[in-house]
Amino acid sequence: MNTRDLQYFVALVKYKNYTQVAKLFNVSQPTITQSIQRLEREFNTRLIRKNKVHRDEMVTRSGMMLFENAQLINKKIELAHQEINRANQRQIRFGLPPIIGKVYISKIIQNTSDDLLQRLRISSAGSHELLHELQDGKIDIAVLGSNNLLNQPGIYAELITTRPFKIIASAKHPLAKRKSVSFKELGNERFINFDQQYVHHAAFQEYCTYAGIKPATTVYQVPNISWVKELVRQNQGISLMVKDALRNEPGIVSIDINDPIPEKFTISVAIREGYVLSPEEEHFISILKEIK
Amino acid sequence: MNTRDLQYFVALVKYKNYTQVAKLFNVSQPTITQSIQRLEREFNTRLIRKNKVHRDEMVTRSGMMLFENAQLINKKIELAHQEINRANQRQIRFGLPPIIGKVYISKIIQNTSDDLLQRLRISSAGSHELLHELQDGKIDIAVLGSNNLLNQPGIYAELITTRPFKIIASAKHPLAKRKSVSFKELGNERFINFDQQYVHHAAFQEYCTYAGIKPATTVYQVPNISWVKELVRQNQGISLMVKDALRNEPGIVSIDINDPIPEKFTISVAIREGYVLSPEEEHFISILKEIK
DNA sequence: GTCCGTTACGCCTGGCGTAAATATG
DNA sequence: CATATTTACGCCAGGCGTAACGGAC
Image (cartoon, rainbow over all chains, first blue to last red; front, side, top):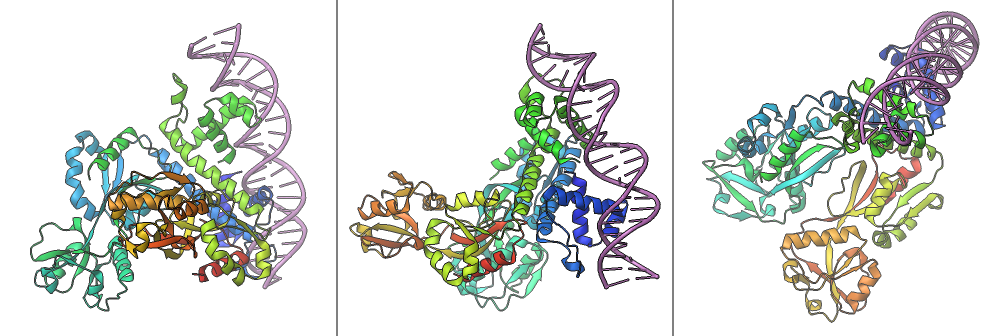
């Protein structure tokens, strides 16, 4: 089978118009007709309905099945091209989320030879974003934080460590005297949450569901972690944070959560499924795994 | 690009022998040479090393990258064929693990029309096995038990419910008087584990790690749940079991575990990523989701 | 020499374009 | 009739086979 046919077909299902697809690929319009006929022969089924009463329903169930699979196939082919194009550039395209980076970056640099550091291209973004960059082939290795054990389609991840979530509050806040707290007690607190840090947000939701509370006063959605800390310091509210995000913050105290943890915050090294590591990349990953 | 070339290439990497591959596909041997040359042109790289000092190292890094991706692509194509071939047989190929089935099957039958039941082809196997059947396209819908939130490559799963694990013991066992127990207390107990029920085994490991115990006496690995119950009844040991597996078993008592649960036992409905449900299948899944 | 892969060359199918025909609304 | 898709047909490239050649042990 010709993979061009799959590309034509996917485009056709999306645009629902042979003429447009032909233009898109700079081929004549009968080419598209013939391509579809080839696929229908190959799979021995109708893919496109002939009595097109409604444009929206022009694809058969078989067609939809092929469409879904073809998209994944096309993406894989595209990825293979990308990976192979870069196979001989010896760069290590590595993603590290800002908060995890804060703790790890100095250790990484200490333990990595200059030669390897030269090759390192670090992108820093939230774990959620990095996961997509990894899936799309924009980076090849990432350290990612997640709530569950990381197990995403197309991604192979290995656990490095798990970290506890803590409650942070101003030193002036009544909670500041406590060493630990149950999440159920926090129903009436004012919470400050992140916008961008997907894992924190998800963990917060998890805890609320688990404890059966719904803090009515979950007000701020702040995009920057140091803003969150500043708001907490000024006693505008409390927040949920991974231990690593905190380092001797004056005016802020962190309080253990003593509920059974419904989901752990995990840190993993992740690569794309089927990605072939260079010796340098393999070495680099072994360094990452040793840093706990 | 021609997908036949990918098949030839994958076989070549596996067999490391052009002649054999040619025989395998019933083509002449130069066909394979030419196929590889086409791929090398397409990807603008060497895939196979020319100075084959060692057969084992005949594939370049680029070649390995293509190999890994090509395997996944070929599998997807194969799956698309399978799915489409069955698209118009209106059977619902459904997997249900025995233990979960024990609780669910009567409810499923009560809530499902005869018409739909006619179409149902149920395979019963452990969740681990069913997951593979789902991935390989042998079944299309499955109810699966797992310890974490189910998130496997190529699988889309939706949570139905979570269930607690319990300790079961003979009525004669000292634990029988207890209502609940901490896992840490069980370090010196004799445990009876399943061979096949992957989730139970994994949960047991999880609990042991979590509680920091290593029951030295984890002796029996029994393949059948009713054998396990019989052994427990005769006070040969205790076991870990999902609540649903138990129904008024004379001579056996179940004891709550009062540790914070490190991993939940979850029950999910799962389908292959990109699988297109028929209206009947969609209806059937909505029935499954309503049974909690 | 033997085994294995590559090159050379001819054949024919398969994918494309143009033009005409047909369907849909 | 206008727009969209399919059919008819001719052209050329691409994939295959046979035969001959080249390299490694």
